Length: 359
Image 1 (tube, rainbow, N blue to C red):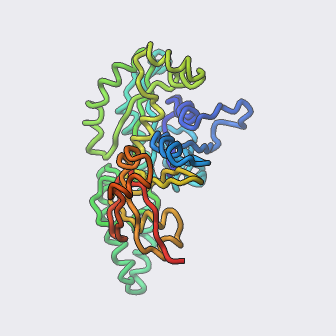
Image 2 (cartoon, rainbow, N blue to C red):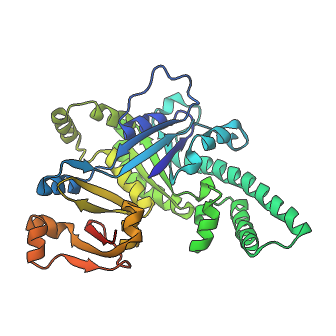
Image 3 (cartoon, helix red, strand yellow):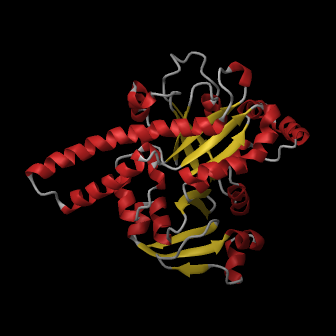
């Protein structure tokens, strides 16, 4: 899973990046316009439990790669920002995480307004997509004057015309209703406003409770744009992250914090992309694998290894809760809880799979 971080200047975007990736700022970085990348894993206590039951030598979690793009402000779509950010990896991201400022009002010339900032950034994404889309449509239009477009090109032109109308109305492409094949065609252009977007309201520690209560209202205003929002205080989370585990638990308890924002953002990102996790376990390793909701046992096999999908016979499936309650495979087999499923079986979150395949 690859997520690009974007946001206006002084939003705390890069602080959020270091928080999510567990990395420290580099004091020797050449300048603030460089793209940074970092990898973190998605905490999953189910992997820990399975590793204990199976006496696994290794535990492997789903990983997320974050790409921290340079900050930008109004006019970025027509500047060098988009060229450097796109080439730096943001265009390859599966989703975007937009950090909006909600702290330090006295430091700014304009009042704090995360909704305004989120929509201003979105406007830049929309404009950037319009510039890219117009170039492609112009090329197809010129081709159409000298020859008949192929069926695929005609379909593409129709999709681009609908996309152009959406963008011209100031709406992001993620709000455009498309079928599966149309989405695949559009995704090939790597339009930024088509990517799922999660807004992170970066609040001051003293205002975090207030923003936590106002997120529902903010989400109502962002829903027509296909955007979800969560709140955090990157400064507070940074303090918590620097504590040792024992001190961290006491500090969080004193503050009434029950869950790290990092974990909430990772979970929200998973939901945003329509992902879930299936599991595998044995004495060598216990592992979580990402899979899109609604995908099948054959898709799960392919995500493990293409050879498993090619030689797929059956999938042995047991629910995580059953596996834990019975203490492993032997108990599940005795109770008849281990099922054989075909390639079209829709995998559920937490399913433990063993793929039977021909060599």
